Amino acid sequence: MPKPKRRLGQALQRGLRGRCPACGKGRLLRNYLTPNTTCGACGEDFSRYQAADFAPYLVTFLVGMIFTPLTLVLSTHANDFTLPILLLAALASAILLLPPIKGAALGLLWAVNETN
Ligand SMILES: [Zn+2]
Image (cartoon, rainbow, N blue to C red):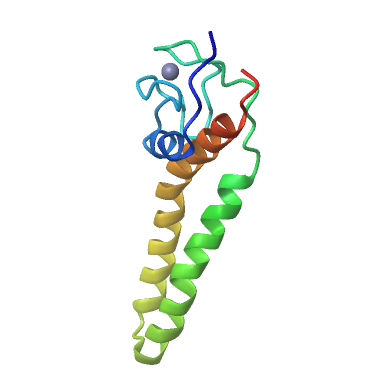
């Protein structure tokens, strides 16, 4: 019996929420960024999906695309607190974006791997 086709959009959504791309129930990450080896709900094997540095690259790109123009625009009206606040906001954004982006990267790898 053939397995159902893996849907990319659904896998990305589940990965963004930190859930197993196969069933949507089990947790994908066990610590901040450490992927579980298997899904606790359906037993899907995650050990062969290595996202490496894709998530940090993407987060750096996104945070840079948002905060660089914002900093340039606001720097014309800056007071002493503007740039430190923007720096903290950029740092907080990067920290908060890393787990969902890592989950989405793992969901992407899972979706494009049709071998199992
Ligand atoms: Zn699962």
